[in-house]
Image 1 (cartoon, rainbow, N blue to C red):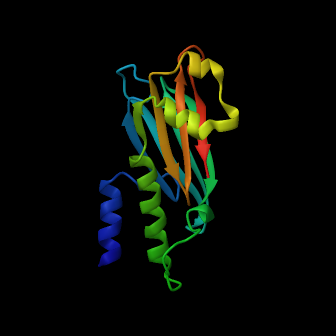
Image 2 (cartoon, rainbow, N blue to C red; image 1 turned 90 degrees about the horizontal axis):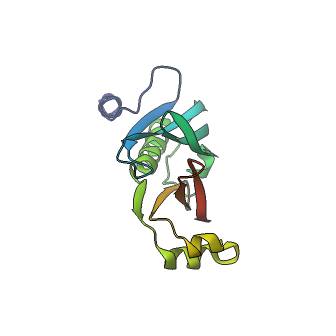
Length: 163
């Protein structure tokens, strides 16, 4: 019965894709502050939850402008004890991927965060002409990436990343 409820919940949350992905979900969000909805897609491909290739893609005006890739073993660095329970491990990974997707945030650019986190790779052009907004997301064990929108090149650029 629990498996049925989980499958139903995933269907309602748009995380089951019948095109062959182990996991697929998307979110509409204005990524570049142009008042138009863009798309974020997270998908995982592979034979099992402990052997997946995961891709997070940002699509603006129909063009992929950023992608981040990692493996599911990075989601399993410090998991709860599954006691060889594949269903619980699968659910754990699905929830982690949904958390990554829902956790994408767009905030006002924070100079103190940038200076504190970029440290040795501070870009003086950013200090002199800071972006208005920054986009942040986290995934896996403890990875965080913060980007800004380069409106001239129409791409995201990394401000900093951690861990």
